[in-house]
Picture (cartoon, rainbow, N blue to C red):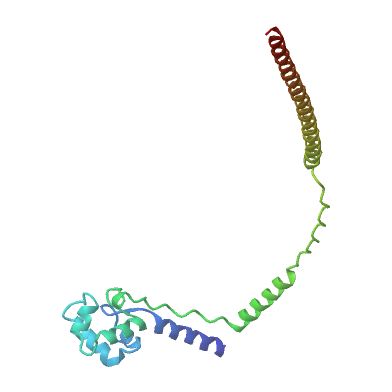
Length: 204
């Protein structure tokens, strides 16, 4: 019972310590609870705002003695606001999170262990064996076709070469015959000329 009461008091103190207090609406006790204000600072703020509510932080700094920009930043960080605004856009004080009770911590630990035990590592299936490499039918057909085409081209080339050799041989033979015929004709012409000369000499 005493422990519960102590924990409740600590939680209440923490909520008071971190709760935002506005300079225009907070009473002496609330302003005093802001770290850095103190009883004297709370009295100065209350006295200054009797002349009118603070418009903004600059108004508070100008009207309350002892609060400069440095102190204003510290007070804002501690939870003091002016019209709900923090000093120059500083984040507002956030209440401290409530501490978990030992029983809750123990319960959460047991739940985590149970969840961990419930997790089953899935069995990893073995990787399938690589299939043997098989040459596609299209590749085999292409190789056969290439060999046939190469053989046919070689055969055609050989045939053309033989035909060209035969034609060259025939042409050489014809040229030889023509040369021989021309030589015979030349010889005959020479003989005829010689005979004509002999006849003319005899007539004389």
